Length: 111
Length: 115
Image 1 (cartoon, rainbow over the protein chains, first blue to last red):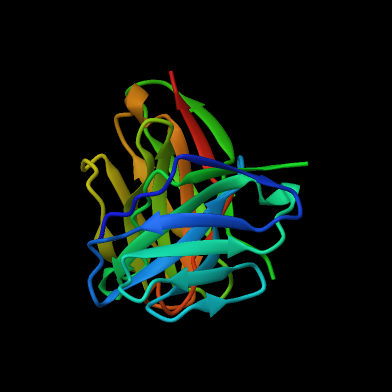
Image 2 (cartoon, chains in turn blue, brown; image 1 turned 60 degrees about the vertical axis):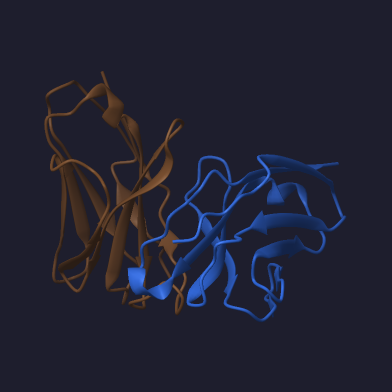
């Protein structure tokens, strides 16, 4: 599985867009990029995933660079409830339902 | 639709004892995986079961074991508990066989303290 690098922490003002970067420079062609988040004292929550095209759902947008070496998760209008640890994971789909979590980015949304 | 249910939510054990944790997946989900979360090591994969078969196993000692029943409910067991086994144990279920085709739904976890 490709190693991912994320900043350990970020701040964002409430109502503004939160842009969370992830570097996965060693990603291979069959590895997907997954984003999960974990709000304090809860289990992780799925946000979005993609292979090479940009993806959008009701929670967020995922922008993957053309060379696939990095990606950005965008929360368009961050709220206080988006304060959480965000995990970027890059791995292939041959691992069944196993995910390898890294350290993640602790996002603090401030009023 | 009920979410993933883990029991017990909290428990305290002493070194050398064993513990069994239970996970009831979302109805219809056949995949159940287990993770250990500690402040030092973060979230680490333990094992995954799909239709009662263990498909993947993480790098944990043999003291950690699990099983899945025909109704997809799963249990994990830790024998001869050590202080380092203190952690939040999370269970996740999925309706699909591969993580890229369906999201993992996590429970709220069982917090184990070993004294």
